[in-house]
Length: 284
Image (spheres, rainbow, N blue to C red):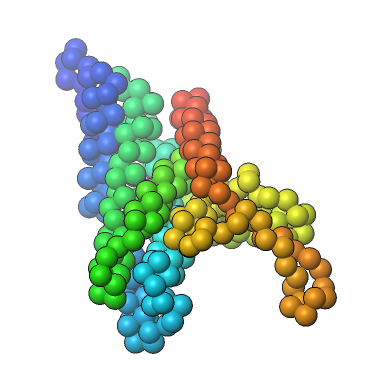
């Protein structure tokens, strides 16, 4: 692990310098790795498919207004790009230290575990931000082709997406610290974000009739909701059968303050727990 080469004689860099060195070399590893270009290719391929579909079929739901375009393109896809980036760059960031035995060489050196953790987290954030930025740039490029300007709501949505990315990385680093197997930490994180959270949210909202305020993906809905005018009401009641029969169901829409609070709490708690686990876990 290159970032561990930070002690020269008796001159040991401080914590901030250790974070910077760890971040630098981890980010270089990410950019040079196959995973970065695979994730970049995924973002470009998704964008290319959307470009073809919208350009060829001209769906009215996309091209009615500028907000409908960004809501359909960015609002529906950005969260998946964020989750995949978190899994690619954070899923094995800490567990790889145990599985690949690199921690055996780094930990005995005079470097804080917290510096390793924070440096790796920052490098994952930068790499994921690059991917998200590429997807956002292609979204704006397509939007400007159909509409003369970019709505201000998209700027808010982009900011919320980046905030959500921080929480996703905190969550993935927590599970990466929890398991010593990279494949296990990646698998659990992928299942939770791509399937489990959505299923739990569906059952809690529709069957238990309880607002799923405790689920991170529910808070992430502000990324798409802010692009809808008017903003969706907190709750709406309907029936499965449009004729008036059948069971009643309630649709919950997270408000912006609530969504930011959920994302922020997840980010703080999971990031701290991940660091604590990494500090206490032994290389045996």
